[in-house]
Length: 312
Image (cartoon, rainbow, N blue to C red; front, side, top):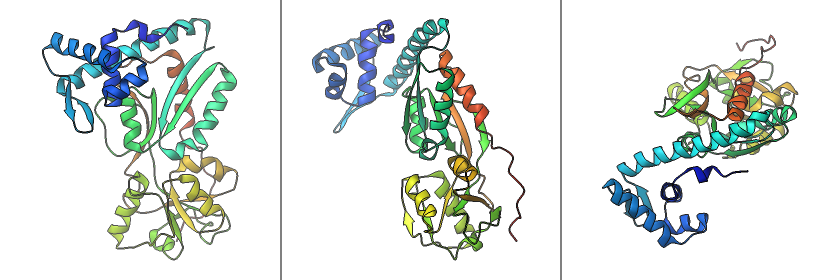
């Protein structure tokens, strides 16, 4: 298989690795060349452009404004090279290819693995790389070219990101099917207050919306569990520990199987975020990435829910 890197200038490739790693030494390790060789290539670019490309800091190197512009150009060139190689292979159909996905942690538990397995049943030669991280890091991975597709929750538009699919994402209370609130399809904070609850960390959008709603209502929850691991919160609920909060897609399959019940939290502001499928704006995606992106778009909208009594 030809390497896409051969379609790029060595100096740009070395420069881009320093941007990604933040250090000449780390870039040299990743590229298996000497730090002095990378330094010479970066100096050559700076001489050619007549501008410094990096700001030297105590903890490494960060791109200057000129470096940011060049990095954007280099990343696009790198991804275009990858697309050409992928599409040449794709002339024989989707027999080979690689898709890199960054996602918020809840999507990595069941939804994306399920879609990957279903896609590989149709195209078994396709390989996937899946990284779960915070919402902001998902978008940054797309912007930096470290992910082909981002699946995350967003509260505002981000420059440089193309949104291939967007849908409203309310916050749901999760509970064991035998819980006292499980007869309701939606609940209020007041109904939830008497019960123990597990919450995600304050850096997640679901927690931020929950905290704002609690503040608006003057309600204070003292969580029995706070965790940055969605699986820990889900198991807290499954084992009868109490309630938790999450987005519908994160728990869709467990609700369908009857393992969990999810009731929408009926408070103002709980829909102030969206699920977004993100790609880099202006990038021509490889065929395999485009095809999988369409595959995800078809699966994201929630199926029609069965009738259930509303909360009183």
